[in-house]
Image (cartoon, rainbow, N blue to C red; front, side, top):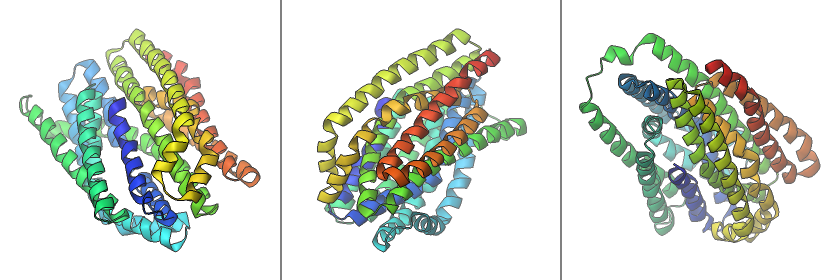
Length: 419
């Protein structure tokens, strides 16, 4: 799953390179702002992935194949309805993004183009979340790798062809995403549906079971609040960067790609924690649960150290590859150490998220995320007037540290109650 998740920030990096080759900071800033709007909207619906993973993993631990299938179809129904609504609201999302960012007109123009096109893929994107959640809940990492490789691989190829070779720029990058999401959805859905043909027929009433639906919606509500708070922090980070000027916005966008690469690198172990913790909870296996927590934390710490050293060693060269703008390169190099250290400050947050998602302790996730968001806002208000963009990056580290430490502080109590 580390390999699978790495294809996502790699896609973001390629998209940034494609637009960055035009040498226009406004286009680069518009892409970053447009991607942020998309992420704010779609990460709010990340419960379709993480919530499905936790519920399927626990059903898998209990040996309940029928409930695994029922969880899948419930998630697909929610994804389809929500995706159609989001696609219809693309103009509103673009307008809201331009208002929130408050950037210069050329940045807003690129933002508008990106969001309006990419939001058309909303139904495909959300269904892909549900399919991936089902696959990961069953611990089928190779299947998850296949789906992510197809989705992001097609996206990367189309971005290079449409965005760079054909000169479509931001619009080409957005249409590339549409194509990748559509093909991945068709492939994943075909494989999972074919599996279900050999399984006992699932009554539709089981899918619409009211207590199960209410339990799923309660879980999804908490994860939605948690996800929205997470993206709100990143949105405020980007918006504050925009207030420092277009060059700073573009430089922060380049460095945030490095942070996301490291984050998705760590997400492989977070996903392992989801699967293993969920199975252990479903099977009532305390020893397995504690072992999963310990091993994923140790591996996460080792991997985060490696990622930080790699960014410190090669970050300057990568910045030069991403953008040809000398101003953006110089600005990004100044703040590179802050981005390079994010894996170390964020490793516990990623790992604890995985454990709590697998155990479906969603209320604690929600509450600790809200606490972390409040800490981020307080740090940003206190530090940016004094330290400028350095203070903004320090506030991001504060956010990551509070997330991890707050969840870790309640883990022992929740584990004792569960077993």
